[in-house]
View 1 (spheres, one colour):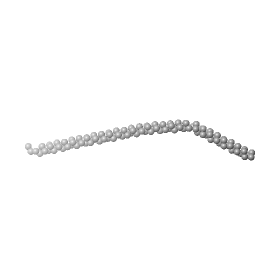
View 2 (cartoon, helix red, strand yellow):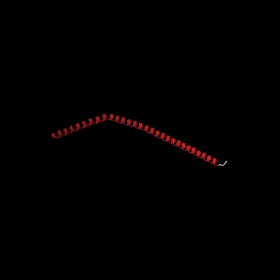
View 3 (cartoon, helix red, strand yellow):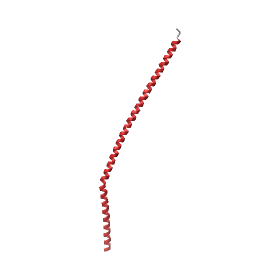
Length: 108
């Protein structure tokens, strides 16, 4: 019937308009895609650069810590050597004192 044909035609027009709107939205999304990809690539590059800087800082921190540990080991070694030298000086003084006492005790 004529009414059915009109209703069918109206439905087809409505669907065609909806399809045209969806196609326009898809085109806009696709046209924005290169910009989104570029932003993502820029973000990735920036994060890679930050990671590189952090790796360099971490490496320097490790080297600094190793230098500090080496300096502490040298200081401990020097302190031990100084302590040993002081003990040797005290031993000599004690030996000299005992030697003096023995010489005094020996009857002439």
